Length: 292
Image (tube, rainbow, N blue to C red):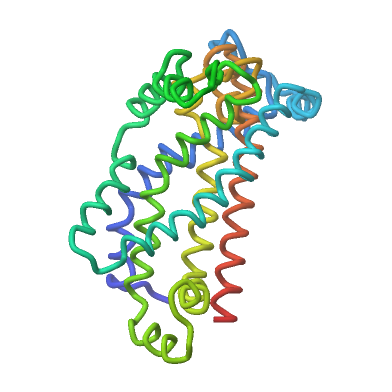
């Protein structure tokens, strides 16, 4: 079977991107996978020493890893439902045909374009002991402020608030694109049948937005498992590892403790988690398309 020029040409156009992707993504990923089965730390000029499953045995017995895993899981459980449903309400709100509604859309989307460094520093000042939030609490009658970033009971939820604040506008735009593809005739027919106001969104909007809901759920879940910038800027993982996530723990091991192999092991576990979420998204998306 001969291959003609038309069959080869598309692959020739893709070849530069494939080479670049292989050198910057695939090859480093394969190296990280290999290093997770070796001892490669401190003196990185020495060749890696093969240790088999020793890093995974250490990971299973690592209390700090399981604490960071628990923090990441809490992040998923709290942040993802909020970022799935609340932006849908915002999208419905800004999808109304009202004068000046574009300004509201811009206001909700503004946090998305703000750098996380700037946002993290701004929220850190707001959360400070004498910051704006505690000053407002004192004005309304609280004798003492809340230790937003210094209490193990508060710090993780304080960081979550920044993640939610940054993500609302992004997911709102995704929903807004879906809402604008729904014909108005459906809402008019629903109004004739007695489905009006909030009920019409439950009967029409939510069923037709299921693919977008699944998409946002998986994207926000993957983002929640990779939270790093907020923690690095605001808390450095403290106090007592109470705000440290799996990604931040990986960073600690790789760049502070120079335990490269152990960091690669943590990264492999994180990769498997994200891969599982991606597969779940594909399954849910296929099932929703079947039943729709």
